[in-house]
Structure formats: C-alpha cells, structure tokens
Length: 189
Image (cartoon, rainbow, N blue to C red; front, side, top):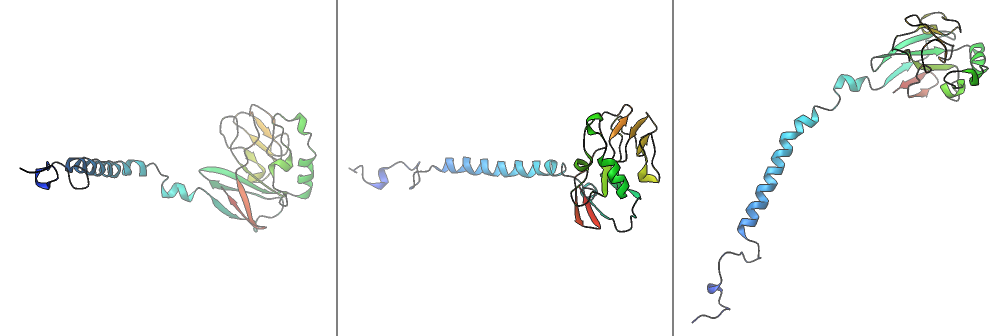
C-alpha cells in the first residue's frame, strides 16, 4: 500500500510549480491575441499623424534682412498669408499712441509686438469677419480709413497695427506664435 507522500500517487494535473498547463495556454493565447490586435490597429492610428507636407508647414523661417524700413511682405504659413511689416519709427509711435480704450478689441501695440523688436509687426493676414484677405500695407501701400489694412469684401478697416477700427470684423488681425532667431531672422510657428 502506498502512502500519501509517494509522488506516484499524486494526480498529474498540476506541474511541480503549481501552475496548470491550461493556465499557461490561456495566458499565452491572450498575449498573442493582444499583440496581434495592436499590430492590426497600428496602421489606423498611424495614418492620423500629420503628413510630411503638413509638418513642413508647421513653422517657417523668414529672412528679414532684405525688408527695408516701411516695407511689408506676405509669406505663407499653414496655408494662410502672414503679413510681416518693417515699420518706420513714426508708424510705431502712431500705433503706440492710439487710444486703446476706444478700440473694439482693445490691444496695445506693445501687446502685438515683441520687446526689442517693436519695429516688426507680424500678423496673420486673414480678416476676422469672414476670412477674406485684407489689402494694405503688406502689399504696397496703406489702405482704409486708418492707413493700415482694408477688407474690400465687407468693409473692415484696420489700423497700421492690424487692430479693427471700423466695419463688421469682431477682432484684430491674429498674431501667430513666432520667435526671433536673430535680429534679421524670425521663425513663425
């Protein structure tokens, strides 16, 4: 007669470490299925990332050296026109002296420019009323009643700092995120 301590009398359903073979198969199957599901889902998630052409437009560097005082240029950033204006000292002074409390969207000139670079006004050239592109000092000469920008589509008048003065536009021309890399170079975006 065999005793209970005899290894031959124990059932063979458990491995020596106490884990059943069936438990291992369940865990391995779940792990394999999880890895397979992640591999199947990855292409769908990866296609939501921005494409290379969109990433290329995420920021743009502009050389400011060729822009003479009093001139303005238009560059494209994220499919939008950006007006960059090298303002004369008299224009800066005029913009700084505007009565901010009388503006529809009160914003001082110093809030719209960066310290140390007040002569450079950088703003998105899209009218805040319905998205038209205003004409004005970025394309040659001042326009509108305030010697700045004028949107001929609906009659919005902006001053030389891009602040709304008259017409249906609710807010000033938007200022994009930008940083000066040097005195003659700026990165927008």
